[in-house]
Length: 121
Length: 131
Image (tube, rainbow over all chains, first blue to last red; front, side, top):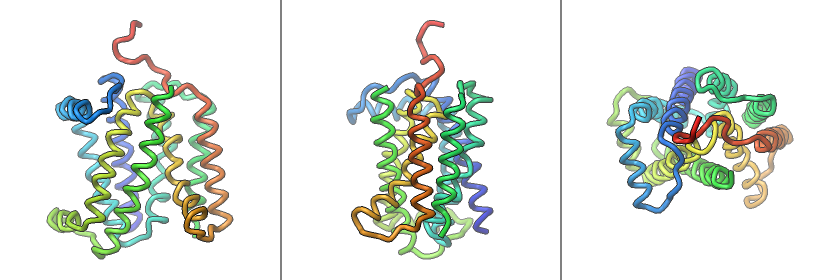
C-alpha cells in the first residue's frame, strides 16, 4: 500500500508541476505580491484550465500524501516521493521545450541522489 | 533573477513549515487510508492539519509566481533545498543527531542546488516579449 501511494503522489506531482509551469508561462510574470494583487492573481488563475487540471492532480496527490503520512514517517514519505526529479526534467525538455543543459541534468541527478540518501534510516 | 531567487526561498520555507504541520497533525488524527472524502475533511479539523493547509496554500502561490519567472527544470532542483533544511535545522537548533548518510544527502542536495543556481533561471521567452 505504501508504494502504491508513493506512485500516486509522484504521478500527481508530475502532472501538476507540468500543468502549472505551462499555465504560468502563458500568464506572464507575477510582479506584485500585496494581498489585493494576490487576490487578483487567484481570480485570474481560477479560470485557467491548466491550473484547474493541476489542482485536480495536486488534490489527488495531497490526499494520497495524507494517507501515506498516516501510515509512514515524514522521513520516508517525502524522500520516497522525490523520484519524479529526473522524469520531470525530461518532460520539461520534451514537452515545455526548456533548454536543459548539462548543469541542470547534473543538478537534478545530485538532488535526486541526495534525497534518496536522506531516506536511509 | 533576484525575484526568482526570493520566490524560491519563500517556496522552500512555506513547504517545509507546511509539511511539518501536516505531519504533526496526521500523527494526532491516526491512520487514514479511506475512499470517503468525509474522513479527509474530518482530518482538516485538526488545527495542525488546518495550519499545514494554509502554509501549503502560501507555498502554492509562491511556487506559481516562481514558475512565471523561471523554468520548471530550474525550479525543481532549487526548491529541493527544502528536503535538506529539516535535517540542518534539527542538528543546529534541536541538537538532533544526524546520521552520516543523511549529511551526505544534505551535501549532495546543496551541491545540486549550487550547480543549477549557476544557470539562467529562464530559457524561454516570457509572454509579450517580441520573438
